[in-house]
Image (cartoon, rainbow, N blue to C red; front, side, top):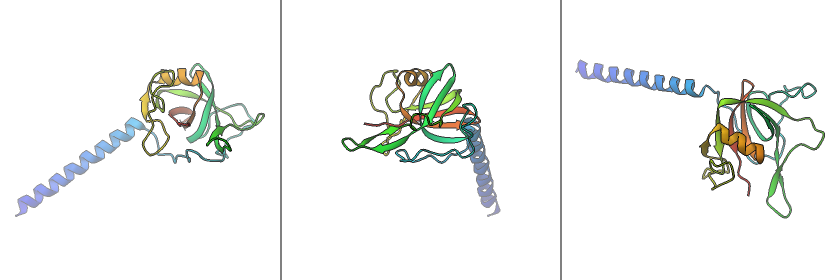
Length: 175
């Protein structure tokens, strides 16, 4: 009777070790804390209270910004927050802060950035590749596609910044 119980306990302990190792490996692979995502179609600009916009353009603090990449230069992207503005004749559109507003950031694009496209992996827009429950890109594409596409035609996205680098860009589909 004692042997089956020991076997059961040993098996449970081994399973715990395997699960802990798998969780640690996953955390090491991603290396990112879990950030709270903003509402995809939020109607206010996201604040960054710790950011000093009176100084030179710099990275946003760690987290996810609903934003738009406005300029790319080499490995560096400039981006600004966006908000959803309901339309009278259409569903609406994303808008950036008014002209003269200094709400802009600049970060290096990480070498291993995760780019989740809403339009496939061709540089030009292709078939829709969005999640079934939301309007967020679901197709993982290369860093070069991200840079080429957003250099020619910016798309509203959820931009994740971690340690001063853009580590993920997830496009938002708008009709």
